[in-house]
Amino acid sequence: MMDLYVSLPPALKFYWSIALFASLIFVIQAIITLIGIDSNSDFDADTDADADGFSQFFSFRNLINFLLGLGWGGVCFYNVVNSNILLILLATLTGLAFLFLFFFLLKAILKLNSDRSFRFDETIGKTAEVYLTIPENKSDKGKIQISVRGSFHELNAITAGEKIVSGALVKVINVHNGDVVEVEKI
Image (cartoon, rainbow, N blue to C red; front, side):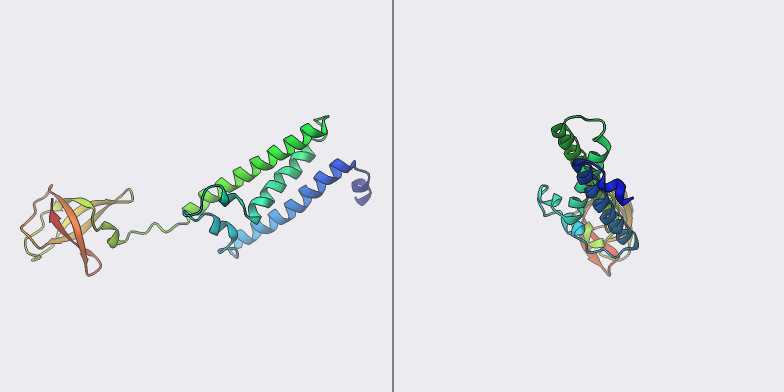
């Protein structure tokens, strides 16, 4: 096996070295990710919404993805392309394609992991529709339908003012006991 490697032309030896090194690191990263050891990895920090778009590409994981594409692109195109300059260009473009592919794929997967649980404090200031009449002066509860982050919720509601009938529009002004919203008629 080593004799085969030694007999390769220098350019092909270079691409094989990069491809094998990057593949090994990529497999290690994949295993670590799958078993959950890297929950605080550099990629998680890179997906912060406050970071600007270009700086998110500078991480060790993305460097390995680029080298993976560069190495395997060089190996695959070596016998197809006669020009070394064209080979370098194709290998580099393959590396960039891997970089973008894995970056956006991992970013999409990590978005699935975000906390999408409903919190009552997110309703404050939002407009809702009365579903079941809300009695006056906080004497009893009615119900409202409200949309929070694209999802509809039916919540218990009270009001400090007059009775609010079904179909009326209201604004949430407070949350009581963690699960009852106080509303006022709009």
